[in-house]
Length: 100
Image 1 (tube, rainbow, N blue to C red):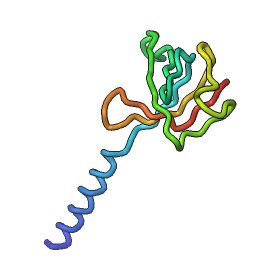
Image 2: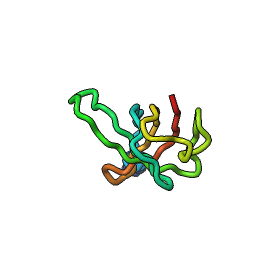
Image 3: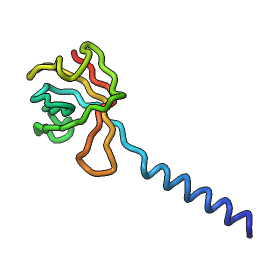
Image 4: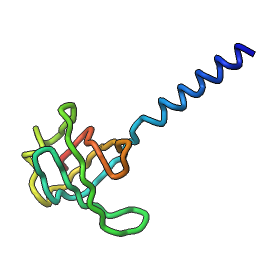
């Protein structure tokens, strides 16, 4: 009985930790705007075919390829961004930004 309670508690902790993890997504599109630490990219949804604007914030630990920082990106540049979705829907954090 005691063993089952311990196993159940550990299982619940693992499930709880997994729920708080962000989800990674690869976003490919064209730069619309670059603000202080915010990158807005326009992409075509592969499922619906509709254009979408995705806003992502850059963190100090964000990695860059082809540019040294967000400030080097210009509107209409082609980029690939690996982003994690935060706990709140619609809030994305850029992990990796690559200029094509």
